[in-house]
Each structure stands twice: as C-alpha cells, then as structure tokens.
Image (tube, rainbow, N blue to C red; front, side, top):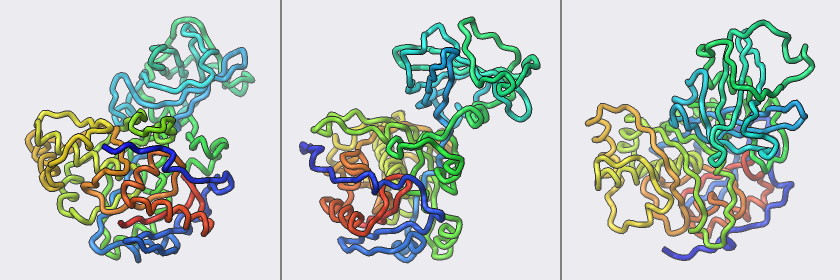
Length: 427
C-alpha cells in the first residue's frame, strides 16, 4: 500500500465559491461531464443525454432527520445535543426511528461542561394535539451516550409560551405522567429537532432547508447529512431517465456526521474513518447482478455502499457466517479476489438460505488512490472540500484528472459543496 500524503489532495476554495443556499430549481445547476478524459459543460437537467446506454443509476434513499436538539437550562445556558448513532434499545436506525418512550443515542454535545450528570433537561412539546414532556439525561459520560425519554397524557398546564419560557431543567429523578407509547421517536424529533446543515454553510437552518436539504426520493429516515449529489434530481429528471431506459435502483446508507470530519494527519492511512449503517434488499442484489458493468452511483454515499456490498460478498465466500462490517482498510488486504458476480451471488445465496429480504450492515470503507473499483463504473457527485476523504475517493476513480475537473469548475464559476453544482465522472 503506497504512502499517500494529504497535502497532495488540496486546492484553494474561497468562501465565496461555497454555495450557501440552493438554486430555486434543483435541476438548473451546472453539470460538468468528464468522459474518458474529455470535459463538457451543460445543465443538470440534460444529464440523460450524457449517461451511457443501459446505465443503472443507484440512489441513496436515506432521509435527513432533525438531529440537532437544543435544551436550555434555567441559568440560560444552552445545551446542544447532536444525534449520531442509536445505541439502545436497538442500534438499527430504521428500527430506532420507531421506538417509543425512551432511547439512548451516541451524541456530540455542545456546551458539555455546563451539563452535569445529575441534571435532567426538559422540554414540553405539543405533538398531534397532545402535550409531550421530553427529558434528556447523560447515560454514559465517557461515550457521550444520552438518554431521551418522553411521556404523554400530561396533567394540563400552561403552554411553554404562556409560561414565558421554552425550556426548564430538573435535578430530580425522571417522573413520567403518561406512557408515551403513542409517540414514536421519529415523530418526537420532527417537533424537537432542527435540520443539521453542514458546518461550512456557517448559518442556521431556515424553513426552506427542511425541503431543499432532502432529495425528492428520500424515504428512509435516519441520516444526519444529505446525500447531496441527489439534490439535483427533480421528478422531471427522474421521469426523463425512465423514458430513456435508464434504470433506477434505491438502497440506503444513513449518512453520518463523520462525512464532514476533516483529515488531520499527513499520512492519510492514519485517519480514523467513520462508520455508517447500510441497508440492502434482496431486490438490490438481484438488480445489481443483472446490470454488472453498467452501474453508476448517485453520490459518494451510494458508491461507498456499493463497494462495501462487494466486499461483504467476499467475506461470505470465505466464511458464510461473516457479519456485514467492512473495516476501513479491508479492501487493501487482498490480491486475488472473487469477481463481482461471484460476490453478489454469495450475498444472494445467504439471503435465500436465511429467508431474508433485507440485510443491515456497517461500513467504514476508505476509498483512496490505488483502490480498484468492483461495481462502480462512474459517479454523479458534487464538488468536495479540499483534503477530504471524498476528494480522495474521486482521485481513486479518475486519477490525477481530479485536479483538471476541479480547475475547470473554478474557471467556469461552478458552485461548490452541498448546495453547489454537479459532475458526471466516467473514467
């Protein structure tokens, strides 16, 4: 494995080139097409004209949850809780969304020093016409695990606005006034939380972001960041793909906050890679098998998912009881590996044997130059931060031409990062 220096994957990104807001119409964004070294500039709504015939586009249908929660102490101090991963009663995100009454999540905690372990933070909400009391308390200090508990059927009391405050804090044990069973966690955070915009936008979420920071096909709630390559797609574009015979497939990777984590080491191998949860269906595997050689992911999250799926199949070929967890450097530890067909058939066989229609796994796959792609023949993606894991992924796909693509984008006044413009990269 070659030594890769982070400083070789940087470029100058002025703040004014970062798109702080989306365009009024998603598919009016610019599109740079890189195909076998040739570069063309167009508009995203024309992407169908540039996709190879028989392409299978693979979309990530995760949906961003309002993962940023604020509680205010009676002293005025504001505690921010940023949901990262569910812990109890289940680590499976799709199931965690359906939990009632209480749950534990790993979190990032803002103003942590102001929150004592004995403090219980409380908010009173109204959800579907009923009052809900929400309590937050530290469950595990070392791991930043926070327990959220909520109860309904409260004794009638003045609304938060009538009381003149939105928050209160108690230092007594949690007292439930109702079962809380009828309010699911996903409904709770819809009322309690805020959409967590990327930190580089340097602004608070606005009402419009609750729609614009979701793909039009988002479905599976659980991400804390959007799969932003998909933000350019409209119903009209999707219909145009269908009319041209471009097939579409939807799988799930719940994007974590680690996607924004900068690399802080010069030797990129030493970077601690974040892990994210993957959900694939039997239909996904069957459709991938039927379209080998034509698979183009929409976004880096879809690409990470697809390549992780391949390596899960490799694990199953070695040991049919292997768990679906792809360590960051696992792909670089093998030389003679099975074909994509053999790998996918191993996964399909496992699902048939176990009568499974869906598998949930975890991946921390790290894709950087020297990686050999197994399923993906290109990518639709936005423009990423300098010295990021995503720049390394793009460089793995198109080599040193990543610089030419980014220089073209700068010269042609493309907008960068999550709300920015797009590219279609076909090496």
